Image (cartoon, rainbow, N blue to C red):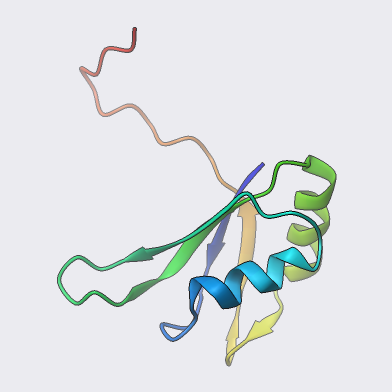
Length: 89
């Protein structure tokens, strides 16, 4: 299950984010979204956990948790809408 993690401190690292979620189970991928111009974090990222039960436990327990002075928001990531005209084969 892929989770969207928002309202992160710009100082939070991928390693810190991964460690936070690993308390609830195995993390398959962990990615912070970076600003192309500044190279710094945009304050959100994605965590993918292969077991839905572990992902739901992480979402329930980490949503609203304070991390580096920020109240983190965690929810299930929704698929990106098609960009119109894209053909999938």
